[in-house]
Length: 139
Image (cartoon, rainbow, N blue to C red; front, side, top):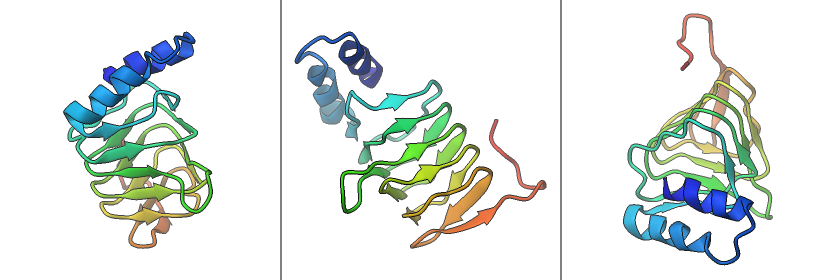
């Protein structure tokens, strides 16, 4: 809720004030996300402590479990994350990559390359495999 407030203040062009709820969010919850990041509706973060998000954009229905880092790698290039994405505890999504829709990223995975839609990424560095029809896709 603090992120949504700071993002709205930023979109309205209010100077300085968007940083207040952002810093409060870090202090109270350990959840670090700049107010300028666009995140679609349906963000679910049950355990925000240690989670850092800096992305170009994030779609609808993103689930972040705990201790996740989304951000840059070597240069200031940030990920784009699609709709209906699940990212497991401790995962890292780094660099100017694209994570497609309906993707699942396993716990502690380190994702350094694009992940196509309807895929699963696991391991260090992450290996990508397409999901079969038998495997469930989150709604």
